[in-house]
Length: 205
Image 1 (spheres, rainbow, N blue to C red):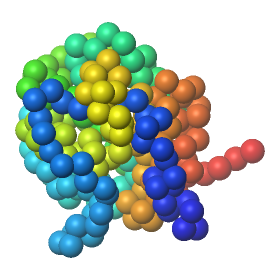
Image 2: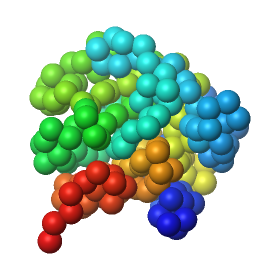
Image 3: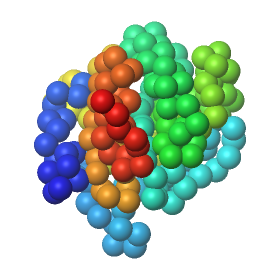
């Protein structure tokens, strides 16, 4: 069971192809438990695409099964394909979305991607309920990026916006079971990874 709960430690961040936000300098922390709430993640204030203020851990992660990716509205590379894949995953999850499984996309360009910009993205892509698009203060987004493992140990790779993450962080906070799936993988593979961490999923042959 420990190996399933700690899948995150076995993921090589160098293979993730992740980025840093221009002009932001923060210490690169390793995920560690917060003494106050037991979380591995910052409890940053964020804004949803609907303009609602939420706390990252308290409101979005605590006690939930989640799938999280990072994107930005003006991206013309991986983001549209990843969004299309995740839309198919959302459809395959059906009524589980927003009830058993929660989907989150966090912008990598928080200065540009306001809630209004994110709402326009949601509308254009016909994203359904249960999937929130999030923005916040640049320093909080950067801290979340590192805490979620969306970075590369090579500073040159990490600092190149074109190399932003093509991964989805998937986890079950109750069981501290965390893993990743490629956002460009077949939607069935992403769904299978979600089902792997969701103890409520019904598995059939």
